[in-house]
Each structure stands twice: as structure tokens, then as C-alpha cells.
Image 1 (tube, rainbow, N blue to C red):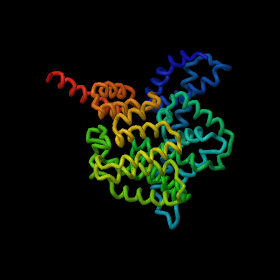
Image 2 (cartoon, rainbow, N blue to C red):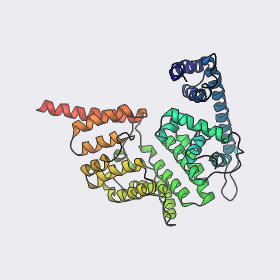
Image 3 (cartoon, one colour):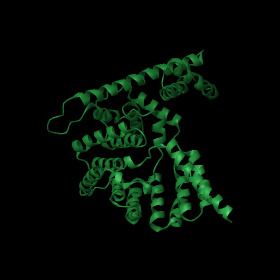
Image 4 (cartoon, rainbow, N blue to C red):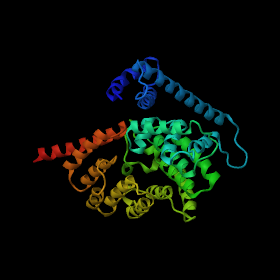
Length: 386
């Protein structure tokens, strides 16, 4: 298998798609799917014209994805055009598709990846970033999931936990830039919570509402990010906060704690604080302890370290951070923040710059770059004063 040849051909094939009028991201996604197919087929049946083969297969993948996207949009338009439902919770076809894609024949990870790609409208790259894996690895996972269910009738729904995970990831993508994705995830989670009356579905709904309530204050008019501590809390949506807290309290009263309820409790503590200074960080650390116990998630441990830094001082936070893998996303940014609070602007500036280079999206990269520039300017001013 000539991987070097595939790497060399990839830009050319993508360029062909762009000349045909395809969106660059969609073209890149289709070519990635074709590369996965090449890895599977070429060792036993190498084509005479590798470039032509890649273009043909990728174009087929592109058309399939375009048809799926058009079908999804038609379903949404039909749902919008329909009159309001009568009494009882309405569950539309989109939510049913989430359950059917989470098929019992798939592992939870593969089911989530397939559902996000086929129904959620996310690209392979977005899904890979959410799961902290290389894009090629995620493309192979999705391809295997497609092959697994290719001969299976999708008439047996998957489990609730997988569907909740998918909805959470779709919301997170929307929260980082696409409002329609976030709103769609909230809509479907409302339906799911009403339909199942499960405490974790309610916990996820509360978490989404509490995060979405802060959306108007998260960015400046120029699109730059506003850290939580600097947000104008007067712009937070108090109606969504009240609803989220009410949903969470009802879920917690059932005394069957899950990870989404724990995350929602942390979000509620932030939302309940009139100012950043008055945040109950001690209680937030306690909820992160619960979240780590429930999930063992390295991301939860990272966020806990930052909370420890707020509750017990930056050196305690740095000590908690020291036991985590430095390759974790946002690990370097968290270290920079804690070093700055500990009175070490030189180290903080260096780490902010390193974190900016590793950032996965432009707003985050710009924010971290500005943080590094701010500290470097302060250091230069200090040296000049001396």
C-alpha cells in the first residue's frame, strides 16, 4: 500500500472537486472517505489509474453525503411547516433516526460516530476533534460502522446513553459556532427528556439550557471570545437559566446521579453567581470530584485542576495539573492561566503562545494569542521601567 502516493494525490483530487463547485470542507470529507476505501481495496486490487479511481470513488461519496444532507434539510423544513402537535410529546423522525443509527450491532463509539456523520450533519474532522483522535482514525471508524450496518435492517433502536452522547456532541459543535446545531440539539433533547423521563436526559437538557443561556455574552462584536470571568452577566438569558435549574433540581431529586447531571450542577453554580468573584469554587470542585468518579474523564480532571486553582490557590491547581497528560487539549492554556495567577507572567506568556499554536479553532487561537501579547507587553514595560 503506497501511503505516500495517497498523500500526494489528495490535494489534486480535492482541487478537482473545488473546480466542480463543491464546498472545500465537503470535498475534503469525501476524499477522506475515499482514502479509507483505498486502504481497504488497493492491497488486493490496485487500480491502473489511482487518481481516476480516487476521483470516482470520492465523487460517489460526495454525492451520497449531499443527498443525505438534502434529505435532512427536507425533514427539518417539513417539521417546521407542520401545525403544532396535540397533547403529548411529539417525537419526530430525526430523533428516531438517532436511535436507529445507535444500532445494537455497533459499539457505542462507532454508533456515536456514525450518527454524528449521517444524521447530525457533522464532518469527519469535527467528530475527530470531539473525540481527540486523528481524522484518519475517525474516518476508518465511520467506514467500519457503515460496513457493519450495511446488511442490517435498521429496525432495532440503540440505547439511550449513546443517543445522549450524540446529542451532547452535536450541541457542543453548535455552541462553538453554529447556532442552528445547538438549537436543534436542545429541541431534540426536550423531546427525549419528555419521552423517556430519564434523569440523565433531564440532566443533559439542563446542561444545554444553562450553557446556551450564556451564549449572548460569550463573544464580542468582532467575534473574539470573552472568558467566563469577564462576561457581562446581565446579558445571560435568565429565563433559560431558571428553566435549566428547575429541570436539574427535578432530576437530582430522583437520587440517581449521572455525568450530565453533575456537569449541569457545575454550570448552575456558575449561573447562580452574581459575579465571577462570588463563584462557589469549593462546591464546584466537589462536583468535579463526582464527575471524575463517574467518568474518569481526563477532560474532567483538567477542568477540576483549574477549579482547584480557584478554590485553593494557583499552586494547588498546578499540582493537580501536573498529574495529567500534557497532550490533553487546553492543558497548556490551563497551565498558562494558573502560572499567570501565581505571579509568573514570563512562563504564562510562553505557554499562552504555545497553546495558541495548538488551538483547533480560530477564535480560541486569537484569544490565546492576545493573552500572550498582553503579558509580553507587560514584561517589556517592566524591563523599560527598570
